[in-house]
Amino acid sequence: MQTHYEQEERFRLAKKRVDELKGFYGNLVSYIVVNLGLMILNLMTSPEHLWFFWPMFGWGVGVLFHAMKVYGFTPFFGKDWEERKIRQFMEEEKKRNESFKGE
View 1: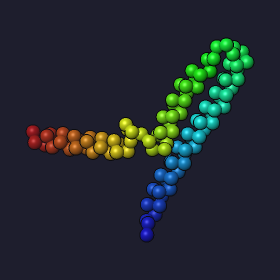
View 2 (view 1 turned 30 degrees about the vertical axis):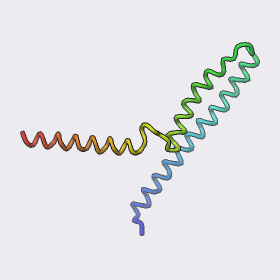
View 3 (view 1 turned 90 degrees about the horizontal axis):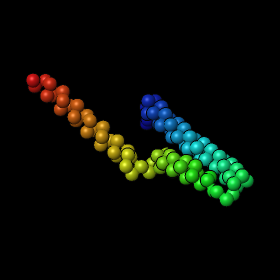
View 4 (view 1 turned 30 degrees about the horizontal axis):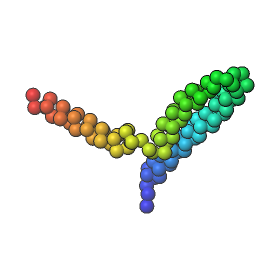
């Protein structure tokens, strides 16, 4: 049986996940709407020079990284990396404290 604290923690984590997904979907919808508008503007005003690809590409890279973070595909700074770094920093702090006690 779960304690009240465990249930609250699960709810908090689920709410955080929903908020992350909502932020990503908002970013994706904005990306599509704005870039469609830029494409239409570009094609109506200067179809000989297609500049709308540049903001589409730049923002698209950002959307891609946002998706990778939200869906848990972070090959460089994933959960394992975070946990390793936390353990490393905790060990370093423990050694530093022990060296001060020994002096």
